[in-house]
Length: 395
Image (cartoon, rainbow, N blue to C red):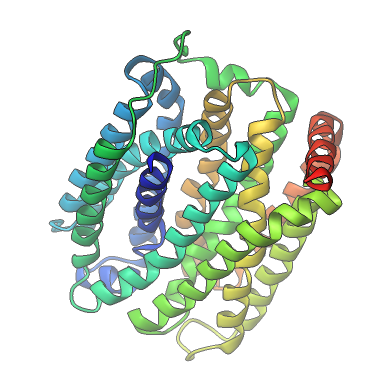
């Protein structure tokens, strides 16, 4: 019950990522803002999330995992509700920053809590965590479309309500987690990044996340669809993310290895980004393009593969404690999520709507280059892959 309560709250937390997607055009219209100004909703959220990741281990090692989860949930409830009261885009961006702080405290600790409490081992726990991510990302756009059709403020109040329910579940069903015997130092996540394998994984993920959030943050502005239409497209995309995370990533990893899965997924994502760029060359106001819709939905497949394998790799590639490795890895990778929305939207406004996706495809290729150039740092993953494969055969 502890695991499921935490997983439910994780689903709601990840809903917050895609929640605003269908209503981005409505927010821009309602607050008289440009697309690039509205994209700062993602930038402030992920920038604060990234920096706060450095504090999560320090906090949880002093007050315990359960209290850290509850603190993060409480902050999300407060700032999601405040976001619904915003009178300007600047206020909304600021409240999303506070939301990002709560999200960091919750998300980083939730993975460690689920891994510690689940009975099926670390791999099963990570798959459950990624399933929660996929379900939350797919449900977020639907919830945003349904509530946003009534009023663009409604999705924020809806998220606050669901997170309050998650707070109650975690408070009542999750047993108090013991504090670690050794308190985590503030510098521990940055020190962990000195490990060649973890830094390779983290910086590859940074470029991958730039491509990921280019699709998530900029595509709603070029679909030329209603909130329901945008929500439906990103629901299909999120379903692909969830299915690939849970059902495709584990067997592929056992068959061809983690690094090869990452190469495959990054290459496929680059191809799909190029497809979006070519489909949208006619311009932003020329109607609905079937190609953009199809390539956007299909991009969920490599994103789902990457999400699971990157998370597992970050947990296993170094000898750092999992919470510390997770904090260092997430600090670097979420920087890609912070940069991409504003940079991609600005490029789309100033140059052309194909340019952000061309840059996203280039980022995927750079990530593949990093994996190739620093492959000697990833030998630990090969050993883990062999162990996983042998365990599966015995099972």
